[in-house]
Image (cartoon, rainbow, N blue to C red; front, side):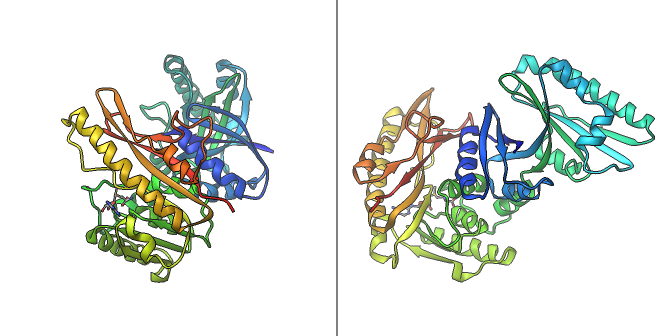
Length: 410
Ligand SMILES: C[S@@+](CC[C@H](N)C(=O)[O-])C[C@H]1O[C@@H](n2cnc3c(N)ncnc32)[C@H](O)[C@@H]1O
């Protein structure tokens, strides 16, 4: 087994849950070695030595920023900087010895005050390595940034994976691990399938494709399963499911415009990747009427439902409580329909909103009602007190909480 690291994005617990839902579906063995803030360390036996399989795995993920292989384990900061020598860089970290060597350091999960001084030490080490390489007749470039870690964009633009090294250093419970990045999140592709789409609807809220992808992965959707999004909006969930290889997706929405938007967006997707009209079907329906028009049962439901009218921030607490009440009713009625259209043991991954005002949270408390309908909540010790995974930015008035549920078993 080798140790590999996963640098987790905005919501590390959600990103970890995504990784853990895909790993069991891959051949091989794995064990979680450690998780420290934004880093997950895994012992893996499934990936090729050259990291090709790891690169493919990375392409599936929405919540992970970088993946790589651990090369060195040391006890303290001095040992870490002493380990990083020109010789070791050439022998263990670089893909091949080239005339011009590019390298940089990325520091993770080190407390802020702790990392400031270490960041300075690393900068000195980088310069020393550069001087050492020059003495050997090699040209060297040391890539730096104002942040503790080099971003996926900097790593990508400087070809630090293909032609150099992004050396990642992170502090775990008792050790410092040093590794090299093998793949970074494909930011160009995420951007294209987000902003490149012909239709968007800022008014009804847009689910970022990365979250949609995490949700499809959390549902452990298999290629031959039918996935439904009954509040499809502009089709983000459907797009990500198709990009991940789901052969048949069904979308539905109460709004004619949303149905048109989704059709246009998926038509465009078909001009970019190998999918066509036989892979998707878009229906125009209120979720509460869906069981009457849907021709077959579905394996998986992944959705971000209607989250209420857009908020300005000036709404009273009463207003937010009324929102919660109306949405709770809609969601429970939706689950009554899901009961009829979801196959036995089917999965549901759904966003529920948590409204925020003056540091007070107004969540949708319907999990007990949903349980009474026969659905089981899949939560882990890593999820929130309500059993979901929170995803939000500090300034957001509506936080997203993602729940994973399974339908009735036989
Ligand atoms: C938050 S948006 C979904 C966004 C979508 N996930 C996306 O990224 O494009 C919610 C959608 O629910 C639809 N909607 C609202 N009430 C509905 C209902 N009762 N039945 C079905 N769709 C409904 C709205 O028209 C809107 O398109």
